[in-house]
Image (cartoon, rainbow, N blue to C red; front, side):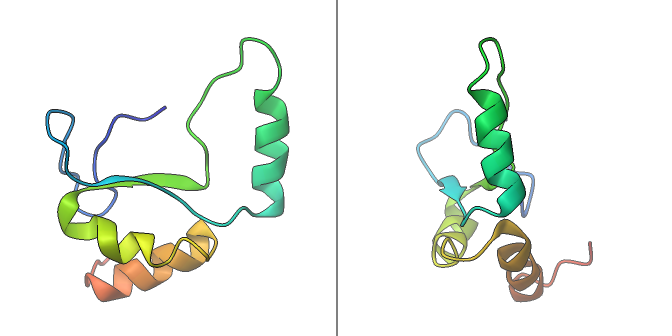
Length: 83
């Protein structure tokens, strides 16, 4: 699992209780990833989840009904990100 570093602003919030992990709607490839993770010894960060600091969490949480690809397009526009 990735450490709690905001996907939007790169803020590391490991030492605070702000923000959280948002799980977005799964894509077909995400179900395949989940299946692979059932294999003993497999670990990793879900490709359909990202960390968001307190400043960005609520907006990201509103989009959890979308796939991560769809949600990130909206969040990039909302927060005026160039990447």
